[in-house]
Image 1 (cartoon, helix red, strand yellow):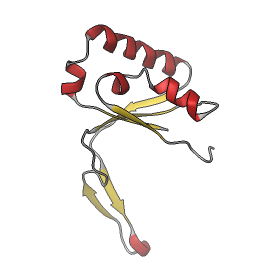
Image 2 (tube, one colour; image 1 turned 30 degrees about the vertical axis):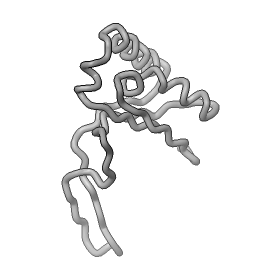
Image 3 (tube, helix red, strand yellow; image 1 turned 90 degrees about the vertical axis):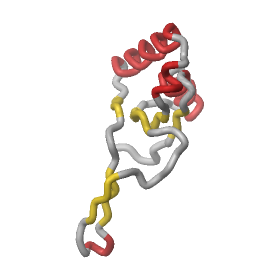
Length: 106
């Protein structure tokens, strides 16, 4: 699973040709079956001890950059996953992409 962080300022200062290549790379990943999405506003959900649900707007984790999107990719190794995400918009447009290996999948 990947989480991409980036902001409009970083995106805007990236060369349009580099951005276009990154978006084309994303399109190829999607055609290959990668599940991707753009992040919206988060909410924190709690139900401590099953005593009642509370919902609070906003993220739990903090970062210098906002979460921009996510993807679930299939890769044979962490190295392959890193290679795949290194060409995505968040990676090339002055953002960062976290790669979280899933220990179990459905």
